[in-house]
Amino acid sequence: MPTEPLKETLRAAAGFVSRDRSQGVVASDLRAELLNPAGAMQGAVVAGLVEAAAEDLADEQLGGDRPYVVTEMEVRFLAQNRQSPIVSSARFVGAPSDGLIRVDLFDDDGNGRLTTAAVVRVTPGP
Image (cartoon, rainbow, N blue to C red; front, side, top):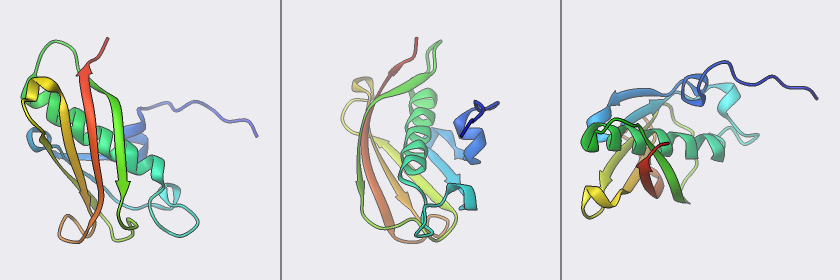
């Protein structure tokens, strides 16, 4: 089946919305194209939301002339993301200059349960 490359960033295509970059707060509404057959957010989309939150936090708090990118990620799926929107919370673990960030995802506009816990490492991009 032929496919075409995205004409926009994955963040834009998935509809991620940065609510507070300095706190790594990014939201995603659940849309049909983001769901798996069980009606929950696909795992790759979950990872993309984690990545967006970490990169926002690093860009805002560490600054610099190059945007930060995620180079390592460990994700713990705790519950299915089924109640929209899904909202992230992010914070540095240890010294910000180490680039280690904890990202949590919550359902129900951030008022629901903790669905995902992740730890990522960021570094300035090329």
